[in-house]
Image 1 (cartoon, helix red, strand yellow):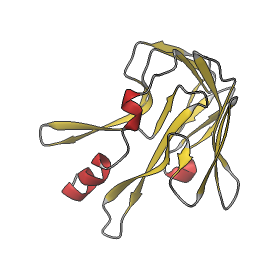
Image 2 (cartoon, rainbow, N blue to C red):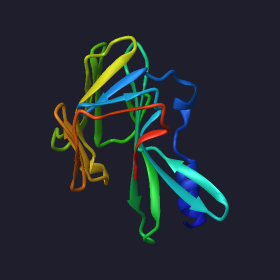
Image 3 (tube, rainbow, N blue to C red):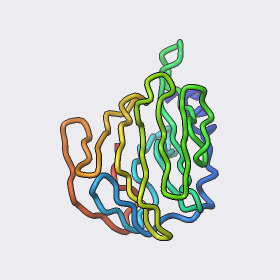
Amino acid sequence: MSDNELNSLKGLSTSYEDQEQYNTVIFCSNIVKSTPFLIEREIKKNDDIYSWRPLIIRKGDIPKVWLSTLVKNQDGEDNFIDLVIESNSVHPEIIVENSVHGVRISLKASDETILELADHKPTSIEVIKLDLRPVSLNIFGDHTELKIVNNSFSRGSISNSRAFIGI
């Protein structure tokens, strides 16, 4: 990882760090309890370890979502960019629709759903639709299963872990 790549990773929003997490997130039919991150990628540089968390969900009157992606710049280096911060779009091609019942994030050009949250309760929320392929990750699913590349996860559970998925 180059210094430019590391700087772009360090530049991502971390405003989620002081936000309360849901006790339970139903992640495309999988029950995730007391686990702060749904997806995480650890990146090593020298003796340091950095984490990229492309999707983060936190509690709020309206659920709070952070979404970031990894793209290549003109020099072929990885560049991490925020798309959504605290359920607000920070990218012109991303639309965020918020309500007390959930959140929908979609692409402006095609109206393709990237994330849909529903069944918002004080201690839990459900990811009923997910498609991170348009934002560079081969992770997608619906209320019945989660697919990561060629693997499927359905009706599983995890608790007291750092992340549900390590990529």
